[in-house]
Length: 175
Image (cartoon, rainbow, N blue to C red; front, side, top):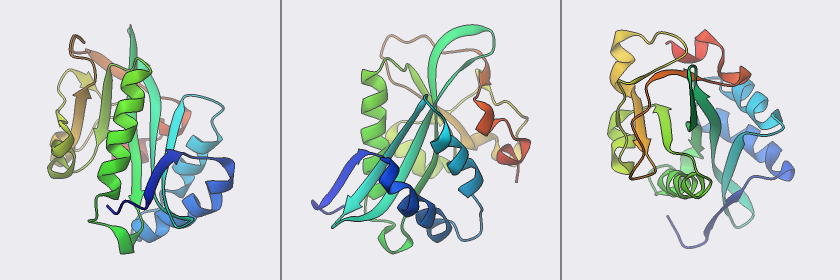
C-alpha cells in the first residue's frame, strides 16, 4: 500500500464510490444488495474506506452481531473489496487491520469472517468451531468460517451467531 492511501470511516458521500467498487472487485458476484442494506442500517455497522487522491480504492464493513443464547459483543467482517487495479497492494490488509483495532477499542471481543483461509490467516483468523453460522455451510466451506479474538482474556464464544436482517439470507451462506 502506498503512503498516499488513507483509511477512514465511510461517509454518505462515499456511497456512489462504494457501489461502483464491488462490481469491479467481484465481477462474478452481486454483493450490492447486501452492501446497500448494511449501509442503510441506522447503527451497528463499521464502514471503512480506503481513499487515494480522492478516489475510493477499497471498502470493508464490520457488522455488530451477538450469540443466540448469550450476551456477547461480536462482529462479522464482510464484505471487503478493493478496486481490481489495486488488488495485491496491501489495501485490503490495511482496512482489516484498522477495523480490527477500532473494534477492539469499542469492546468487541471476537470478529468472524466467511472467507479465504489463506488470506485471513495473515491477520490471526483461525477456523471457528464453537460458534455456528445462522445457516448451515456447505462442507467445502467449513474451513472458511473463521474467527479472531480481539481481547486476550476473552473466553471463546459458544452458540449460534445472531446476525442483523441483511445477513439473514441463506443465499449469503451458500455457493
